[in-house]
Amino acid sequence: MQIIGGIFGFIVLMAFISSAAPAVGHAIETIFGLGVLAVAGFCLFHLARAGARAVHKGAELADYYLVRHPADSIVTAALRERQALDATALQAALTPAPSALALAKPLYHTKNQTEKARALRQKLDADALLAQAAVRRERARAACQESERN
Image 1 (tube, rainbow, N blue to C red):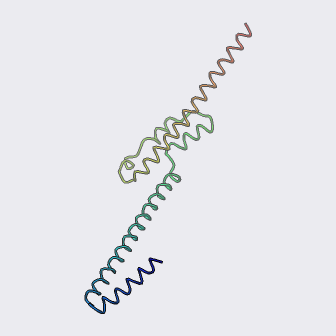
Image 2: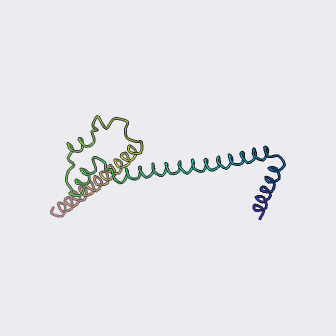
Image 3: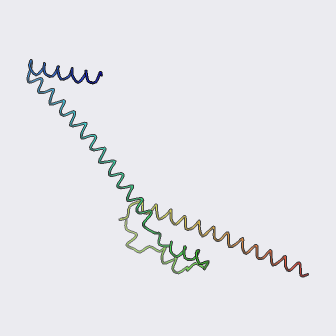
C-alpha cells in the first residue's frame, strides 16, 4: 500500500512542479526517464550475459557428449573383445596432427579430452588388475593341483 501511495504522491508532486516551474518539472521527468532507461539497459545487459553463458555451457556439454576421444574406439574394442591393444593404432590415435596443435579449439575441449583420456586409463588399469588377478589365480590353482599329484 505504501508503494501505491508513493507512486501517487510522485505523480501529484510532478503535476505540481510542472505547473509551478515547467522547466524544473521537465528536467525531473527527463532524469527519471533516463533512470528508467538505465535500469532497463542494466537488466537487458545481464540477461544477454546470462544467455551467452548458457550458450557457452551448452557448447561445452555438446562437446563432451558428442566428441569422442581419438583412442576411445581402440581401447573399447580391446576391452570388449578381450584382445591385446593395437599399440600402433593407439599411438597413431594419440599423436596429434599439426593442425590440431593450433589454439583454435576452446579450453573446454582440451579439458573434456583430458578427462576422457583419464577415464580410458582407469578402464585399462582396472582391466590390467583383473588380468593379473586371473593369472595369480591360475598359478595358485596349478600349484595346488601339482601338490595334490605329489
